[in-house]
Image (cartoon, rainbow, N blue to C red; front, side):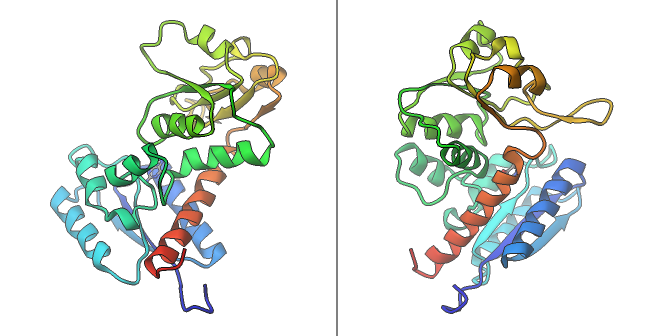
Length: 260
Ligand code: GUN
């Protein structure tokens, strides 16, 4: 890319001072630096108005030196996240949150995948796990993880069930699963007694316990006794999310310069 004069650039917007978001944004910037992507941080105060944020995004959309734009979520309550996501140009939307990119994923013809589900798929592929015909249970139905995760597993011919807070018998549903993806934000909700012997367990959760400890949505010790493969928290899915952001930013730069 260097030889072709392509130097990928990523704008990272953070609004307010959520400590978890600050850590995520710092890690994203560090990864950019490590692989040679130019990152520009826009750290805005919590009182920033929606109009001000949309004006910044408009400016970044038009900035030819930037290939990707990421606005760290969650945003302060007075800002409409949907409006912000809709304002980012789909070809700079390295999170793949824009409705255009979500729709492209749905029909299986996309440029970008959302970073966390894409990272989970990479973990599955790299571990040599075949998804075809497997019972896949996704816990959580967020736009960022649960819903696209289910779609990617479906594209790879999994038989997919999505569980959520109104699911009648979570334990029984999870017990059927060959592949479990927990992305619900409830500390250690999935325990070993819910895991089928030999299942693959992927933990997307990132929960801070009252004692300050970081834990996932899976009770690791008990689930690990049953699982054939399991991801830890921290150090499992998290680094993959960042790797996929780097991949999307490189891809955005290539597409921007008409290189596939
Ligand atoms: N907040 C939690 N996960 C994400 C993510 O993947 N992208 C953005 N922009 N915000 C997030």
